[in-house]
Amino acid sequence: MLTSFQKLVAMAILALALVGSLIGEWYSSYNIHQPAHNTSYNGPAQGVYPVVFPKDPNDRIANYTGLLAIFNGMLVIIAILQIRLLVLADRTAKYQAAQMKKASDFAETQNLIISSQIEIQQKQHAIGRLQFLATHRPRLIVRNVWIDGLNVGYVLVNTGSTSATVTESHIAVEYTEAGVNVIPLVASGWNDLGNVNIAAGQTLYLSQEIPGDMHVAIMHPEIRRIMTDQHPRGMVGDIYFAGAITYADDAGIARSTVFRRQWIQTSGRFFRVNDPDQEYAD
Image (cartoon, rainbow, N blue to C red; front, side, top):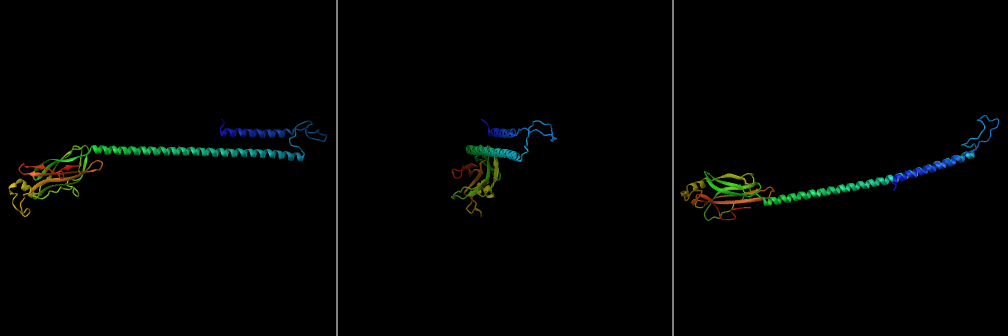
């Protein structure tokens, strides 16, 4: 099957062949004999040769008119070929534009698909990370509380499988009068430990200063009933080492650890209180 360009070339060849045949026909119609010369003619020798341009004015006008008609016919054919060529060029341009638009649409679709795949992968990664953090979370607990000179020594351990960053903390040695309800400490607004990061499995050995009156009461329990301006009824209540710690995991999820240990004079050590509101780790 011929392409549009091949068809255009074939039409041009046929047009040229038609014009050539017309010119040949016109030329052959004027292959005439020149009449015999008389003695007064000083031109070439007498003989027969073709005369292309007749001497008769009417014949010359007819010749010019024929040539003009052929020339106009050629102009018409050329104009038709040019129009055909312009139409072909326009169709080619439209086709190329359509193909480019299809390619652009396809590329845009591919980009959308790739973007969607990347977004899905990112969401899957985020979900997987959250699932990992949910099953591999940090967990801060307090162990081994003891008297260390003028301080209470204690061990803070991250028993979880990911790191924990302390954001707020309140650690204190408290004295509570007998018969008074013990209120759990809160970490909000306090930062006794600082913003320390505790890796999974890491152990910190820490200490908290004991207020002077409480230290005297612990070291010399026999004077606890002595009344003072600070303790008009004496120190007949309980001494506690307590704290509240708020920390964040790698996903930024806040968690809490609360503890309270009571000083038992007869045992000479701190014991965990039997109260879930005073001793827990989220």
